[in-house]
Amino acid sequence: MSQINSVSNNYNKNIITTDNCKKYQKPNSGRKAAAAAAACASAPIVYRGIIELTALPYRRFYELLTDADNCEYKKVLEKVLNKTGLASKGVKIIDITENNKEVINDLINKSFSENHKKIFNQNPVLKKRLNTHIEKISNAIADGKQALHFSKINTITLNKNLYSVAAFHEMGHALNNNFSKIGKLINSLKLPFSYLAPLAFTTALFKRKKADGEKPEGWFDKATTFIKNNCGKLAFVSTLPVLADEAMASIKASKITKGVLPLEQFKKMNKFNFAAWLTYFGTTIAATAAVVTASKIADSIAAPKEIKD
Image 1: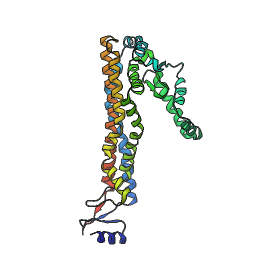
Image 2: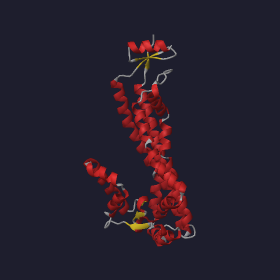
Image 3: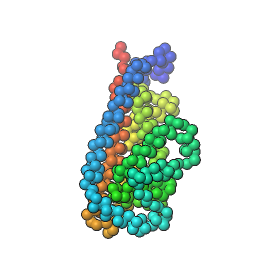
Image 4: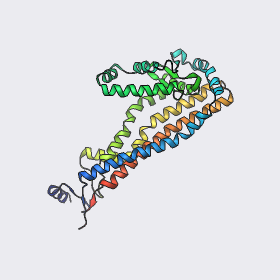
């Protein structure tokens, strides 16, 4: 059979002859382009739809927070920071408002390595995109819609008057970074794991589906076929370190505030943190669904067609 395959492919590279003696027509360039375009158009719709759906609980609990709640959270920030030992490690909380939001730009720059700074400074396009991203982050923090923990410089930023509820979760991240070997390991896995989702998505778009009975040839074909066949699983796995780190931070937030916060605010904080974690889980589901959708749509358009005798 291997001789038959060899002879057939030599005569016409667009024809696949499999080990079960079936013949398939490979997709042409037009079908491949149409498949990639359709997959690219559909994946963001699926992704965004799931993200918006899973963000609903977070928005609900965010709206339920009152000024009185934030006042209670704000009262105990320094007390909890000292109680956890984070203050002795040099962790500090910076209150970000509309008047000093440019501080975020300095903190992000301090978090970058010299090599990263050099790359951005030498590339105007990248630098412009970075500045736009920093501006969005700065506005979100100043508006009380986001909080950040800068692990390299042991700094937590948030608007204390509007978003102190998030401070304890960020302290949980600081505890993972300063006191937990497991936390440090999980954080070290975030970057390498994050490459899996774009790798899976790109392969799902451009890797042709194998015909029934067609076997991969060579190591590259075998590797990309494996990625193609497991693209959804790889997209799911890519977010696991983030999910684990966020869950650990929220669990620690509950532990360090138990008996410190009034019971009502303690319960609200736990519900809020769980709702926030659901947004990360939503990202996992959205990425997985988007990659699988892209793969199936591409396959439906550009799969090899059997040639009937």
